[in-house]
Length: 380
Image (cartoon, rainbow, N blue to C red; front, top):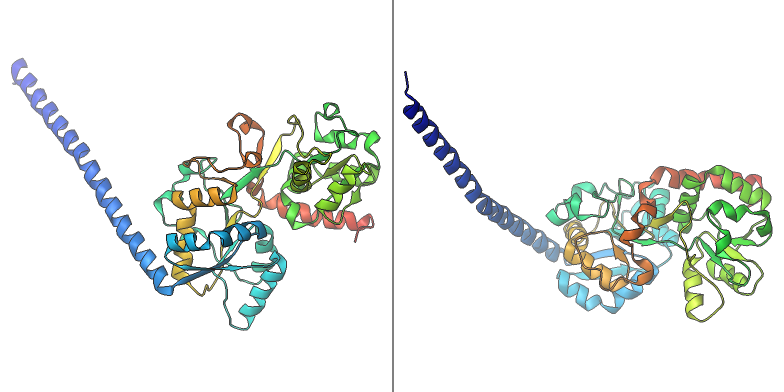
């Protein structure tokens, strides 16, 4: 039988052994991290070399972003070590051209940087896209904690949102004709006093999916039915025309997709308010706009495609993108210098944010439903 002193010595020795083991385990962590980092650096160098061997990456992005990229193309190519070919044209026409080329066995583009509408409506039915997730390998990209909301901002199986803008401008108005103090909710648009005084973008368009889906989810079908049945809204041929009518007093407000045209008009000193001075009850949408990454199937430069995706979505790539475009990157580990004030997502407004890209079901459902509902009411 062991004495108390023997038992004490046993536990002291055992504790010292545990402590020593713990110290050894802790000491190996930096070495393991260094090894992992070294392995990744080697893999990244190999990916870059494979991309540079192909020599080029081809992609399409939005028209305003394309102009920005062209201005700094030499700098971008130097960062990547690749030639960059930018495809220009309207999304629908260019997508049709790419699909037609595929049918004849020609694969002309690697990536599509834009919103999800063209992807879902044109590329997916044509079998022209591939799932993006298997291509994401950079540790900074796959770390979900580095993205706003604590998860990768998927807009669909094929498209990852990487940038966003808040949209306080669901109602663009003439300050001589509308007092925002009368509004507490978007339901107030349906006040009988606004009958015949509303112009709007066509809510069936792909380019207004963020505000359309917001109204559809937050207010429901009844809002749109009452809007068309009771308020006699006029569909503008474009945002600029709608805002011009508001400026001239023909209508008191322009809703759904007029905010950018309203901002430009206000900067020119014209009498229009593109943003409400207060947040209404339902909050506001934060949309991805054209800031989505999609990988085309059978790319002409597969190694360059994969390398560009991971560089562009990494911390370095998103700092570059944010400064270039003035948009707000959805990475939460980068500085915000260069972001235009109108695009900034404010921390104090987080409870009002509604992230539009998280609603792919309502996005497509609302478009289909509106097409049927408006057709019944005589809209072609």
